[in-house]
Length: 405
Image 1 (cartoon, rainbow, N blue to C red):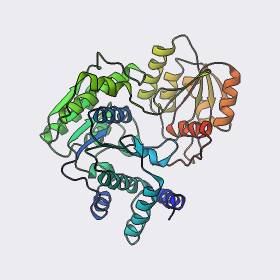
Image 2 (cartoon, rainbow, N blue to C red):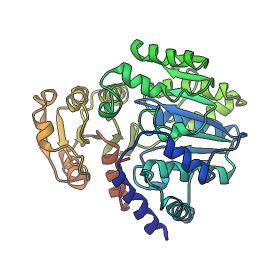
Image 3 (spheres, one colour):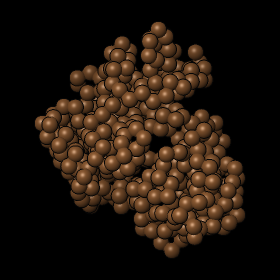
Image 4 (cartoon, rainbow, N blue to C red):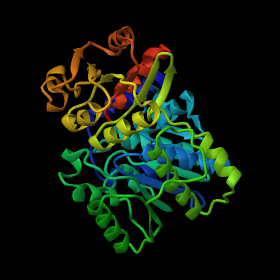
């Protein structure tokens, strides 16, 4: 198969849905020879918010020390290959097609077909192994305990802030969600946790104790360094990543860490994509993340009220998210996402959090962006990474093929 044919086949596997469990990914990793060698270190990162940024920061630190890194993240914004990078470089289209072709043949007779996410993980792991990565950084897709990434043995477990999210899959309380996130702790390898609310931290500590894994909780942001990522919360993520790097045994010098933190690149997290007009994109998908977004906006652009272009998928706490966003703006432009799971204008027009706001309803990101620019203020695009991907694709004239996983 060529790249397009291969990707079409892979995307079609989304029809198999989400299947939480470790049997299928373990079998895939074993039969496709994708488990990492013992000499390769693996850092596994879970959490509700900040895990992608923490992964990116840890990757930057490791590369600054001279290590060859493999970074696995999800979802992608525009290009599927964003999910797997070696030393910051995406996997090639040719290698992607070769792996998908081989895996399609491998699983053709399986009684239970692997999911899109399981297949994507195994492509990344085989790519990292072939490339000779010395450190692999894995961001969980959802949860942790039964997430496919947990099938990969880890030398370090990292848990970023836990909040209410994916409740239909992970549970309807912080304790239940924290238990799923803490489920990545499957050995006595060190555990690094961000500052957590007490209910979540208690669950994480219990799991670490059960597995006899040493737990370090980072409560203070990093000091004495400048960070390329905007927002005071990123200094907290950086402190967690730096501690993880230290406990993984990296040789860390001040100038090395300084260079790494100044050169972290991570799309879609309070990313200033234009200065005239001011356009910021941020994938704040739950109330905790929206609260951080509102705080970060005030830190950087106090006194400026943005026009908010907002779109989201179902099963999100829309009122909780918009309650925070309404603190920095009274103008919202609703934009549906190109997905059957997209919320509709009727879902947000009756939100209590937006009863004092002016709401507009547009058909797509292009129409919303044109309107917002004519409105004449700063623009904040937020609510869903899928919406951010549509924006990125539009401004770069690229094709956009979103996924549900």
